[in-house]
Amino acid sequence: MIQSRFRVKEILSCFYQRRKPNYQFLPSSHSYFEFTYVDSGKLYTLVDEKEYILHSSQCMVYYPNQKHTQYTSASSGCSYLTILFEMDMNIPDILKNKIVLASQQMRLEMKRFIKEIQFDSWMHKEMSLVVFQRILIQALLEQRNSMKLDKECETNTELDPILLYIENHMDKDISVEELCHTFSLSRSSLQGMFRNALDLTPKRYIVDVKMKRAKILLQEHRYTISEIAYQLGYHSLYYFSRKFKDYFGMSPSEYVKSLQ
Image 1 (cartoon, helix red, strand yellow):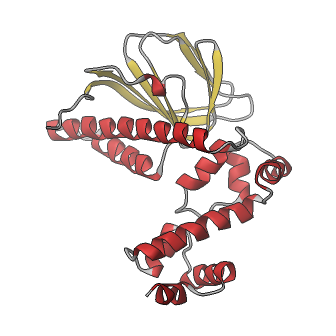
Image 2: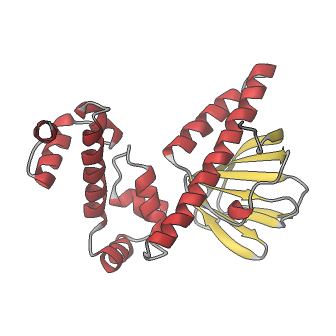
């Protein structure tokens, strides 16, 4: 028998905000949960007298009666979604005071949620509750996996969110400039972090991760070569095949034949 132990009871309020530089929300606390998802920019938050920084595609849950405030820097603004909600039971503490980088699945669920809440029918309202519940469960899974990764791999803690960002954005053509912008780093600082921790350049690391993922996907025989290329952010099959051959010494089709 499978019984639900985790249910969103009510969404009290939901709003999308665009804040300019030097914005500050006064400290507050309330008796319900609050979920914040940063869509773009960088959001600073002070929780229990400790400062956190939420970057694009990162989220955080404030627990009931947690005193917190949110603000932007003097140089950049921020766009983010806030959801106030109540639960039938408390969310496990593994999300408390934790920043979670949204996976691709979470980002898809966020788009679905935003679509559902725009309709006023009871069916769409029910669906928005279900979708938001899935978002929270995904956040719990992401945080649990992150904790497991921290125990298994000792890496530069400053580099961890960048590596996780790359892992969760495999479907994009990730550039060094994008990483610098997302994590507010200079190109030389980013290069130094990768060199010191992994003895690789950021660009080389991205290629390594994508090629190893491509090899695993080809072994599974679930997708065509074109579909795999697209999943890994390569919109040119020729370019993907050339990269694969440069890396492994054979084309994707030749590799598939070798498996047979």
